[in-house]
Amino acid sequence: MSKTYKLTLTAMMIAMGTITSNMVAIPIGFTKVFPMQHFFNVLSAVLLGPYYAVAQAFCISLIRNLMGTGSIFAFPGSMVGALLASLLFLKTKKIYLAFAGEVIGTGVLGALLSYPIATLILGQKATLFGFIPLFIFSSFAGALLGFVVLVIFLRKKVVTVDENKSPAIKN
Image 1 (cartoon, rainbow, N blue to C red):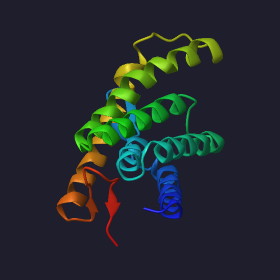
Image 2 (image 1 turned 60 degrees about the vertical axis):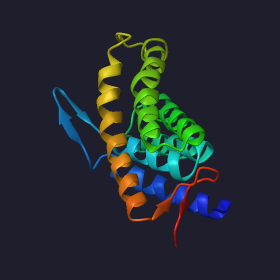
Image 3 (image 1 turned 45 degrees about the vertical axis):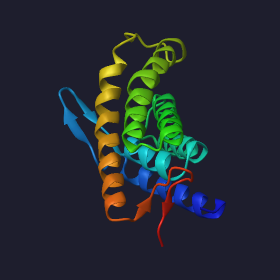
Image 4 (image 1 turned 180 degrees about the vertical axis):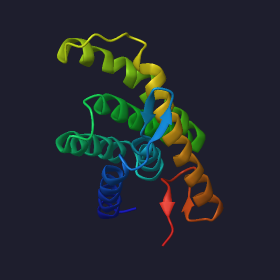
């Protein structure tokens, strides 16, 4: 896959992720889960690799924050999730590990990184483990959607994953 193709696909994911981020909300208990960022993290982790996955996660978070529709917590959560999902997939070529990497990266590591932002930078009282359930719900829903879409793409042979090469999208 050429760099131009990867940049174009990344830009399309950024645009779609920004637009759909507030369109799809799942009410869970006292909060709403916005899973689209995690969906695009898993797709970009598998299809594009770590650099592009982290770049798209950063860009979606940045644009949403500039538009006033996101929070500062999107940065550590989405970027760590995209990175871990990419690295696990790159090492193993297993889509379920990209799913797990997104959930663990965002749901646990991203949530833990959000605690200092809430307490030190924003000056808000927060519990250390208060972010984890919310981040896990959101990342699980979106990553599961990404996993299902990728499995369907593989079965329909839209995407191929070779052990020795990076994934390829058939034209």
